[in-house]
Image 1 (cartoon, chains in turn red, yellow):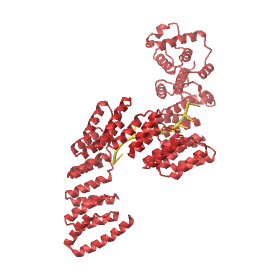
Image 2 (cartoon, chains in turn blue, green; image 1 turned 120 degrees about the vertical axis):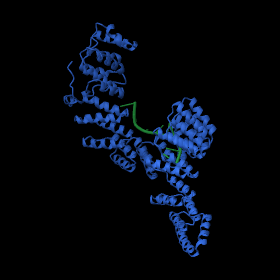
Image 3 (cartoon, helix red, strand yellow; image 1 turned 90 degrees about the horizontal axis):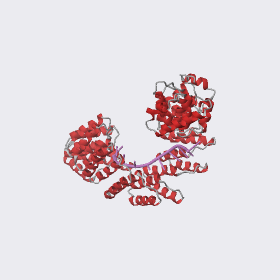
Image 4 (cartoon, protein in one colour; image 1 turned 180 degrees about the vertical axis):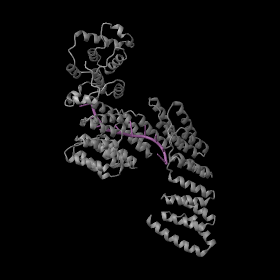
Length: 606
DNA sequence: GTAGGGTTAG
């Protein structure tokens, strides 16, 4: 057999007018080889003798049944030239299993008298691609010196995309284009879908631009992927515009495009568009499906419109839709967020009654709800039940329990769970640490909190604002403002954007310690950044200023307070007025005049 | 042989 051309370019040039040959065996299915493959082989091979077939059958049996065949095959079949490419093809047909053939070929290539064979490589590579064995195809390509046909490479690109290896797919895709091969629409679409799934909209737009540049016209699938990309980019209106355009051209995308648009408009609270889309779907005979309603219910639950979500869920059942496990889980979760545990429990039993088995998601949602209302005993029961049913404990399930225990003053138990996570090999994430840190802070165990904080930093976890909020609050409350400020510094150095109320805690802490001047500086910094301090922060500062006879400053703060729209509690107002009266009655009148004016103005605004 | 799904904090 002739040596295969070494470069892709040569290969392509010799084939470019014969697309049908480039993708030679489109009918090879799964791991096997069917008639289509035979057809392909017949165009390339001499007719086989019966004896070759018989021998291949026998070798195939040996390979299947004898685990250590590699050591005995040569001596078992001394009269047969196992290196003959014709024999390989015959064996391939008999084995009907690409992975076994691959193993045989790799064994061949480890022998001394081996000569690489282009056809065998083609057959194996195409077989791997057809079997969607993307990783095996990739390692075959790197371990064997062989250049697949352009059509095979295209199929390989699609295989990589489906496998989620979008980066690798793009590399091969680029290679194809560099060779001047314009991929099929199917391949473009596959790459677009892969990028959408990977939420890589940057790649989507780049690919689409290239696609347009190469003169390939998209189809309704292309549009579907672009609409999804717009939705991922939070550019839902553009996606909607594109939808209207294709509808005008007489094409109707599949539900997934509608569903993503609906979900996006729900997020933007653009409910008239949601309703319009539902109407379009019905008019175009694309009946809204369980996914459509699930997106709506989920988004309503997220947007604190859970009553509305529950109403839709019940309507659906009345109209004959059968909610599935995910739908039930979504609704149970929504009800649990509302603390409607009774309704959640009813749904739980309803789904079980219908034969839908709760899974780890359902359990976690329900356990979360039980924790929220403080029914920790039942939460634990359900947790054990979940484990007994074979669902593994995960970071999420542990976090849910730890958080629940901490919220209800059982931090020690939560800490035990936390330690067990390490023993069981369950990863702790920032939510695990934050929950426990907050639990300890709530119980005044600041040292334990600080230790955990140090531990998570040491483990290389990225802290969040919530990591620092509770410890800073507790330290300020305990009068240790200096350590609180150290934590603040650490947070700043790590680029963590603090929660607004963290500054409130520090101002209040400073005020309580009598460091009012510094408190004033922090307040000024907040106002400069347009952050809204809490009412209590102003009040505490005014009280302290007033007690320290810094009345001008107290009035200045009062001024800010009113300009933001707060009003002053009567007792603080009274003590301030008393102070002012002690000092200078004329001054009092002027100031109060101003204050009252502003207070009235402020109450009108708010 | 179709494509889209769900659970933990702030």
